[in-house]
Length: 294
Image (cartoon, rainbow, N blue to C red; front, top):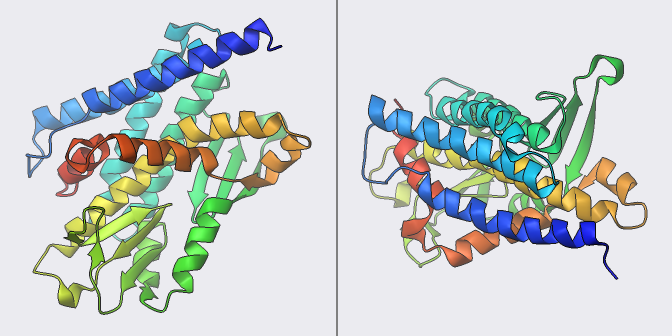
């Protein structure tokens, strides 16, 4: 028979997931604006700050701790995560890599505060299929690495696909693998032709020779925003749930030390895509708004 504490934790978690999904719908910009303005930018920055604060607060609440104690530190992490998205849309070489690292640091802050750790006690940095975990406490500082199984499998499939070409220069600049289709245009969910897609932290672009004229820089910026968005979903939402689930299995703590399966991330992302039609997806609204830069 489940212990009362476990039952209460499950109930709180279920309510928290519904609250976070609602917040995603309420705290994102519209897709109509083509160029950022100060007022719009303040709204977007505020929405990211609010989402970070509420995520940490809800994590504290799920754990039976004070909601308000998690809000303030999480809000700061949300602001840093927003800065990472903005950096990723810049035009300088390596902007995507820099933005992803900053965004991941912000997501780590949100998670740390929610878990009751020091704000920068643990910093998680994704590098393709490898996830670096940096512990910053002076008495036990160090860096360890975990294999992200989902990303590794997906990346392997792309590398073995003869219809795709790996773009090393863009990958270094984006901080994540970038592929270009050979002699074909990528189809979206509805069957319409699209310029590119981001999935499992990997960007795939259509053959530019077959596409109508488009701003290639904006297309890449759009997909790089999605890469940074995923750091919050992975680090602050999916990873804590998956680590808790795996830790309850035999030798689960050992497995968590070296492997990140990505199963909870896939479930959360799949659920959001299934529930929300494309035109109502807040992450697409934000990427479309940010892609034009400042």
